[in-house]
Figure 1 (tube, rainbow, N blue to C red):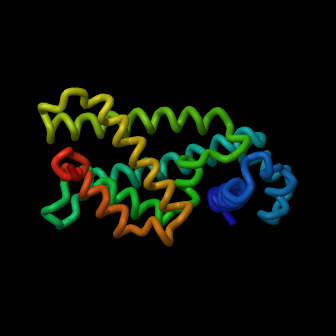
Figure 2 (cartoon, rainbow, N blue to C red):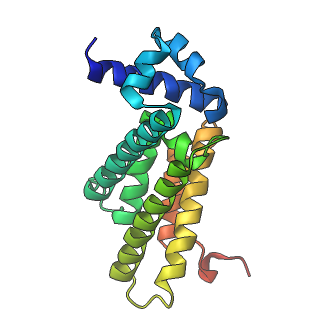
Figure 3 (cartoon, rainbow, N blue to C red):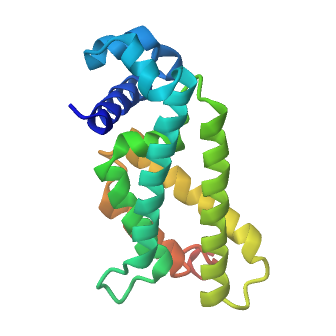
Length: 194
């Protein structure tokens, strides 16, 4: 196995442990045993356990970031959808394709290193900028696009978490229908019973 392949294998093994039990469970001995290597190989490739965790967070952050970038650049063929709805659909698809990657960021595991929280803050800022720009572009008269973007972000995060925790009830169809309904003014006072 090449050094690059071995590195990916160790990252995969570490991610499996972290996803199931948290960072505290991913000890050098356990990782080495699960990967079928010796601890010196682990240290040779990553320096120490902190270096391994940073490499894992960086890899998964890049994966999630590229999935988000794809979601923001690809519109669905459905004319009902605008970029916000299409982006949500794309991210929802990414969550279904790589649930462990998204659990890492939507449910930061116990014992998460500072690098994870740093990456979370960076990605949240990028998502908020995207949401605010889209709101300003599509609803130029919105009184407070910055805080509306924060509300949309929090709501979207909650829906993605529901998808990971309870996929039987939080079906793709249900979540997308809800996002479309809300995006089309479904929560305005016009739709509330009098």
